Length: 138
Image (cartoon, rainbow, N blue to C red; front, top):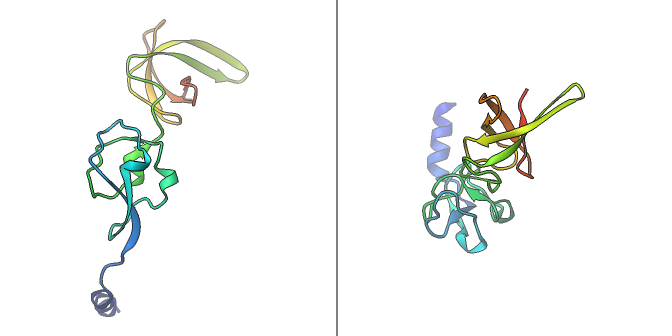
């Protein structure tokens, strides 16, 4: 059974599919535009295929020219910068506590971030919303 699979893969060769590749080297923390990506026929598992899912996203790592764009390489643009003062909100059981905190990392909507409460100096983990508010994780 295993031999048959090996023989079939040798006869058919690698599977090629349309995938998005970087048109040029794109540094980390850059917003991807339509001119930054190309649709190419490549042999690479896990490469993104839909340009609408990539354009407008921010690179999490450097993307090198001709290399496929993977889901983990991109994400929503950051709304919080490191050391930025952010609204820090704790909500549970109808009680809402709001204060200010200092972001210890960069983050986009949906990301978890470490935030230092400026009043208590305690560091908490919070989830960022689209407006840049940090909601304390429970």
